[in-house]
Image (cartoon, rainbow, N blue to C red):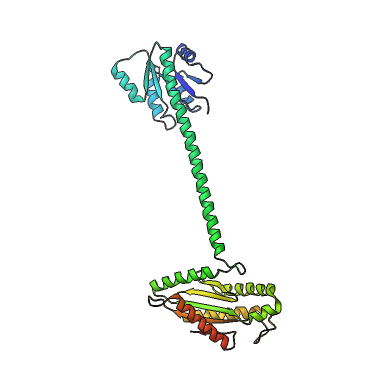
Length: 328
């Protein structure tokens, strides 16, 4: 904690010397000013714990100086003790308090009284500084806690995102799919808008894995996932890994015609990737089969029924020769 400073203001050097002698202490810095103007200038360089201000000074008396000090944001809270040899009448005392004084000392000064009063105000200033330090520490703790809170929120968001992603394909996982489908079902029911679901399955994928091994099989899954992800164009649409070699696309506010456009784009994208599959029963490269279902959600139906419809359509697509889509 820094050493407190006291400003003594008097137009007579001998009075300043007397005040300095009484207040002299290694624990206190005493600053002199010989006029009201000098006093105001000193407040620009120091944070005073107390001002001892002579009332009777030429040009600018103590009352004017005190009024100016009280009108300044930087100095308005510095306690001021008026030092005067005259005007002990009640009206002058009231004027002093009205100008911002907290106390009066009358000349000739009693050294013990002066020291006692100064000690009180220095202790108050010490407590003020301690409070300011504690407030700064508390503010720093609040900032630290806010930072930690934001970091925790970011970490939780990253964890939530990681827990919602499929570790192999980086697409949303089955859990995210289930949550999203329920949410979009409820939104479609409120707005009475169509909801389309497409389930995609890689054709002859077991034969692919058996022939090329699981490492190459995983690479195939990643490539198909990227191709399907490129096939949906809107941010509101979701393509997820449904399980194994199956993927699913949730298309909010999309009617059957719109869903068919997406299904055709998916088929074309995977076909053009031309991933070699020499052991497929129907082609020499990887293809997919798709099942598509569209409905307007109601209170009397549920999302499970939409999944069942898309599954039925997928079964028919596979039964009809694969590398195609069917609508339920």
